[in-house]
Image (tube, each protein chain N blue to C red):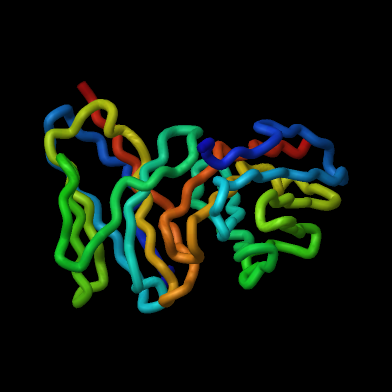
Length: 110
Length: 114
């Protein structure tokens, strides 16, 4: 099993829609979690960290389910500018490196 | 106050030539990482520096790849005898403390091997 796995998509949604991405992780990449965003031909940028109790930042909500070993990202009221690839990231061990998933592509249409 | 910078932004080379890619991390960041990303693919970890030492170089794909970091700052990734499969975007990132903390990425160097 890969350390961090994501559905590559693409997810094609209309403006204003709510969309959710899931990501599964293995035991070796289970210390901390993040969502990064990568625009086409650009570098990845941190979108948000994922906390055990779940956390929200505006239209974005991240949740962690340790029992089932997955994290999720929910985007409400999608905007055209949300179109990007969303990278699920785990951390290997207490001092380990970040492990990046291959990303889920989101395309928001007018 | 600038972010991570990388040079060159684009590099076209011929198969068999050596190339050097440079990364300037954010000032004060002790950890530095190299990744590569092929077209449409995820990030492939290459090497991690903490200060000038490299505790994890497990991702270097072959002995043609090497990296160094001097003065706890600038890093150079060298690819010897380049092959066409080395064509990719090479991304550098730095973080404030060490592995596992938020990484800030540079814009990358797009390497094309003809």
